Amino acid sequence: MKILLLGSGGLLGRYLASELAGHTLTAQAHQDTDISDASRLDQLFAQPWDAVINAAAVCDFDACEKDPAGTGRINREAPLDLARRCAAQDALFVQYSSDYVFGGADDRLLSEAESPHPLSVYGGQKADLEALIPSACPRSLILRVSWLYGLGGKTFMSRLPDLLSAQTSLRTAAGKKGCSLYAGHGALWTRQLVEAGQTGLLNLVNPGVTSWEEFAGETLTQMTSLGLAPKCRDLTEVPYEKLGPGWAKRPRYSSLDGAQLAATFPPGPTAWREALGEFLFAWKSVAAPQTV
Ligand SMILES: NC(=O)c1ccc[n+]([C@@H]2O[C@H](COP(=O)([O-])OP(=O)(O)OC[C@H]3O[C@@H](n4cnc5c(N)ncnc54)[C@H](OP(=O)(O)O)[C@@H]3O)[C@@H](O)[C@H]2O)c1
Image 1 (cartoon, rainbow, N blue to C red):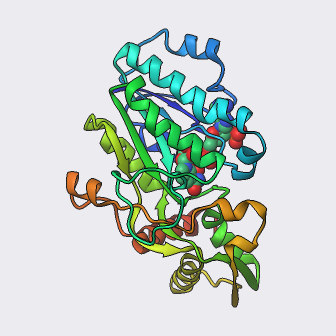
Image 2: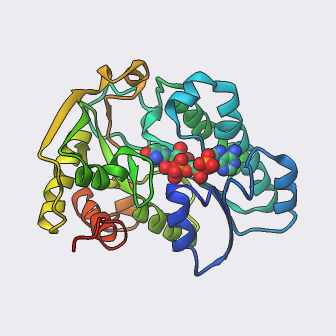
């Protein structure tokens, strides 16, 4: 397939670029293409694509709160423009959404049928995409992901192995429940779904509900089992809503139900503890501090 990947320099984008290497892939990082630059998109869309995958976004939660209009041009207007351009070519358009479309009141698994109720600007931008993309581009696939982590990522979960290796104690946000997704699996499943021509809205997570404090504890346990000798001896839990003004707008409960994906493509993604193990194995080979 002839595939255009936007945002290929980000966490998920880098895994996608490697996962899609078997296709005729044009991978564009931020410095190659700004997705809000219409004239640059005119150039790229002068040729036909089988699929266009948008992994570009402003994921900085506080930046979205401070500048809804500026971040909205990238998180809302640009993906809608991409969707329309894909519709004009009958290309499949793939966009990522987030568990932050939910308000966090429901301590249960949330299926694709649940109505979004975002508390934040970032969550609102994603909810708008979920509502507007299907009519802008009938051949669209919206993948709702959450708590992404992987090599080189900036997210807390991505940085955990480095933090636990370097520090004797670590504070973790506590009290939020949700699901995680190893970016390697996010890329793998995106490729499989694109190859299958899947459309619609799908939750894509490593199944199993967890919390940041449990995820940090499990990372510490698995690092020890793998002989990675983490320095950290003390994990301190801080109620997440006390971490700063924006934190209360992050949903307390936002566990995505992966049952639909598992039923469509059995057995579906790997459970979260095994996925974390895969990440740590990869981290061990490329990023772990060398012991003499
Ligand atoms: N990370 C998570 O936990 C999480 C959770 C739920 C949903 N998601 C969604 O999953 C998708 C992938 O996220 P990620 O974690 O891979 O994010 P990421 O690591 O922050 O990568 C996003 C990429 O988009 C680029 N970008 C920003 N503005 C751009 C623009 N105007 N034009 C082109 N590229 C631009 C960024 O470049 P610069 O670094 O140069 O700005 C960065 O390389 C996003 O849609 C995100 O909203 C992520």
